[in-house]
Image (cartoon, rainbow, N blue to C red; front, side, top):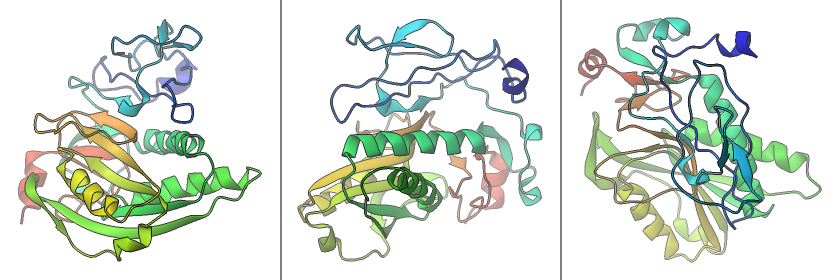
Length: 284
């Protein structure tokens, strides 16, 4: 295991904690066991919580711990130095515009596969109306839906999945705006009585998602769940947490994996931190 795991070492010895776990059908919160990593891989940081003793888990350092709150996803700590750009391939036209790789593409893909399993087990193989928040959420949504369909194909029950789209705008350059702008989308009344899964790229302050949920809830859907690839730890947060989170990250402006800065960087596979030169270069 050591040779393969040491191929991608962080720029320093420290790393993010992992707080991913699986909710058993909406009751309690427990998670899958993790395999011990090499010495210089990501150490785990778990919140001080107590869980029933029949659900013991081992953390990424190999120590026996109780399962953390799965809703936080993979927690990347504030002192995580990221990966050096020279370890990866990325578009040459972005050379000099990025600080470091925060989350490599392969880790993103694996995490989304696990989210799909969590969602399907939690929802219980019922028909799903997926509402994708454009533009940054389209890649996450496409990969998540594909994994959900794969689970459905290998089950004894067909799960119908329809996808609709809505576009919101809450950023100008790298700053979150106070008001959400809705730029398109179909009539939300079609969501009445449906099991709705909202797929978002990033939850920051939470105000944008709360406004969208308020707009949807008045049409009385049967159920609403929110899946977000990223959740930012920001002092401006109003406390909103999605039902399913891929990664909890520091309050950084990140790009890649369809996340943009003024429409640039959507073609970047990894999630990276943009540097000041990049912000100035593509500022509008």
